[in-house]
Amino acid sequence: MKITSTAVSLNVEDVPASSAFLVEHFGFREEMAADGFASLTRDDAGVNVVFLRRGLESLPADQRDVHAAGLILAFVVDDLEGELARLTSEGVAITMPLTDEEWGERAFQVRDPNGIIVQLVDWNAPTAQ
Image (cartoon, rainbow, N blue to C red; front, side):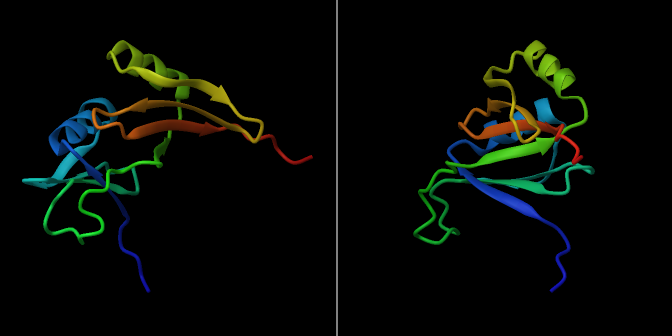
C-alpha cells in the first residue's frame, strides 16, 4: 500500500463556521467545498481537514448523526507563545491554558464554533542522558 495523502474528517453542525475558523485563525484554505462539505489544506500541514455536516445522506447510517467528539485536532508549531499571543489578540478564547507536561509536551487549546478542540503544541522533551 502507498498512502498519497492523509485527511481527518469531522462531523459538525455548521460546516462553514468550522471552515472559516481554520481559514481565519490557522491559515488553512478551502480546497473543495459543497453543501455540507469542506476540505481544507495547508501546504505545510501534512493533513487535510474535512468537515461534513451531520445528517448527510452520503454518510453511513451509523455515522450520520454522530458529532466529532472526544478528539483533539493537534498542530505542532515552532513558536507556541507567539501563536498563543496571536490567537488571544484575534479574540479566540483559550479553553486550556498553556500547559507543560512532564514528558516534554507544551500545549494550549481553543475550540472552534462547533466545539472541535484545536490544540497547538510543541515538544520540549528532556534529552536522554
